[in-house]
Image (cartoon, rainbow, N blue to C red; front, side, top):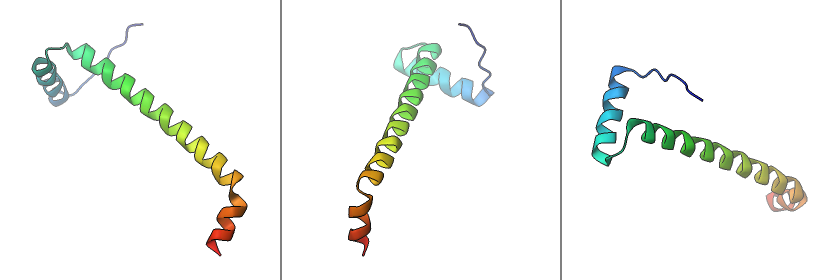
Length: 67
């Protein structure tokens, strides 16, 4: 799927310089950044779900420890 990404002049220049320094295309760097973001968000959601499950599972113990 194609999409248009509008960057500021400053963002474009920073991305161009980074791509040049790494010997990669601007698109490769942008795609990697998107992939990294999506993975991080997914990991955060999993961590939150596990923390909630643990808090429920150990609620009595946590309450007693707080006394």
